[in-house]
Image 1 (cartoon, protein in one colour):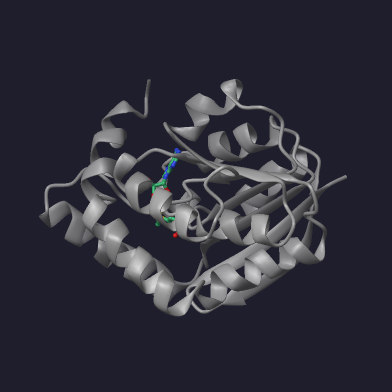
Image 2: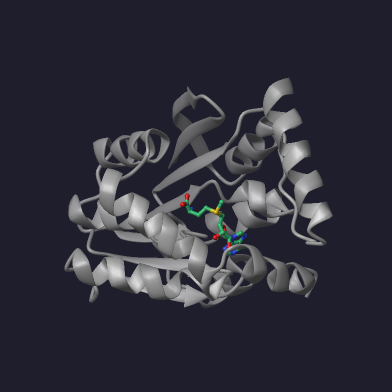
Length: 214
Ligand SMILES: C[S@@+](CC[C@H](N)C(=O)[O-])C[C@H]1O[C@@H](n2cnc3c(N)ncnc32)[C@H](O)[C@@H]1O
């Protein structure tokens, strides 16, 4: 599979120590502003009884918020196993262990083994994956009603920051890279799959877009 060499590096970068630190921060402060805005926008469009898929969900805090808001259950498909222990601990603390599932794998490879879902969340994930179109087409194949997407804004300063980050990764001899995929191309991919943008807001470094199936 074209993505196999990347998988090794995801596990080197998104490790248990990072997960534990992020979990501690979440316990103290909850969702950050961008994540909270995306979750609120999805809730405003109805998540009652929904099956949620979070792609590259890390700790799974966004899906947890959607389940707390009325969704039935959620699946987090994560390419890195590094988050799993902290995600399970958080799910226990929130009383959601039986409604949040963590699966390890590349979502693009896993998609054909997943059930259809109602809501898909991709929060800061397409920027960690080289092939945004493949990821978005795999999302559409699950026939969701709502998709929440957060990606880096296509600005000079965001691109410069991402280049610096890639330089630091290169210096650490990691193969993993971050990407600023052209937003128009990503949104056109979704439009071709029958989705339209219903919410589109900038949050500093990030852009939140919510799409609905026609
Ligand atoms: C920057 S982190 C964001 C984690 C989480 N969504 C959040 O906002 O806290 C990106 C995550 O996407 C995961 N990821 C990247 N490509 C993936 C793929 N093809 N399938 C599943 N997970 C993926 C990485 O392992 C990483 O945990």
